[in-house]
Length: 477
Image (cartoon, rainbow, N blue to C red; front, side, top):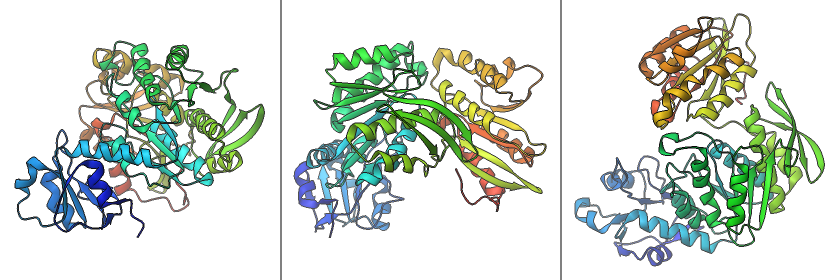
């Protein structure tokens, strides 16, 4: 059996106490009792809202072969007879296991952070490195204090490329995580006004993102966005951290991995990339200039790690947008169809502008409209009214004439838009949802975007539930 971990190794690494007839090994690790698979270990992590110990019996019912639980919670587990490893703190035990996973592998490891584009870049890296070796990467956006150690602990020993996303809401959060990851190469996609309510300015955000340099191994490299206004600050921070190889990507003439030109296509985009002085024309299977820019960071990673660049170029053509981050659905309505662009996962001023550009580039048909369906950007603090109001500029420049809004902060955008724009505003996501379902028309393009906590994913789900996939479009991009 090809175990992810043998149980004796787990017990030793986590300094745990075995209880019951333990299996020889486990096939995977889960912290969700609903999705745990047969033969996996369920780690009963106590979070801010949910304590995994309360769902231990569900995990067992769903096939968990082993529980990792806290000593203090053991009495509350009652009559459960499933094998267990008992530890003082379950999350701390997971961190220990993650560190051990990093130590046992000879994989080339990449860490990605940035205000925008972390997950998309991580998925691009997965795609372009897969032809060159066994890839292990975080699922979804597992980039915080439990997501990083969980991704590490899930990394098989024979991994050849490990890709980790590292996020933060406050200063000081990235450093301890990247010291667990110990990357050979770190990428900062860009610096933008995300979590601005927790910082005074973009320079403070850049300083927090620069913590990723703390974990880069000696002789390692970083790839920075040469077009970003905070580039020089990040470059200085990298040199101060004794990073040996500081490389760049972007449209800047001095970028090491340069996006020389970009052109939107019906199924994504065409780019002209300059790598090592050679220009290559490439197709990317996902739309948007921001996607193309981050593709240059992925291409740069392939070049730095010595992976197969030609196969990486080909793999970009098969790239698909990530759910909630530009994924497209052609849906039937009336006698025709409409296009829904799902940008519902998260939002900040920079990603809003990128999504508006996607909407502007999308083709309508017949009497169709380009409709921006927008919700509040959270964690903007005292800057909330200003950054929402400023979205009027990109919308007007893009020629967007229909804007449907929900949320208190979006009143600032509502009031900033001229009468020439058809605006509908609602206090809640639920009210906007009813409006969208009623008023979408054939030929429309709807771009749906808000911060995750606003819940615009419900609008996406409601549209998918009500309107069937358009039969002429088999591929979603």
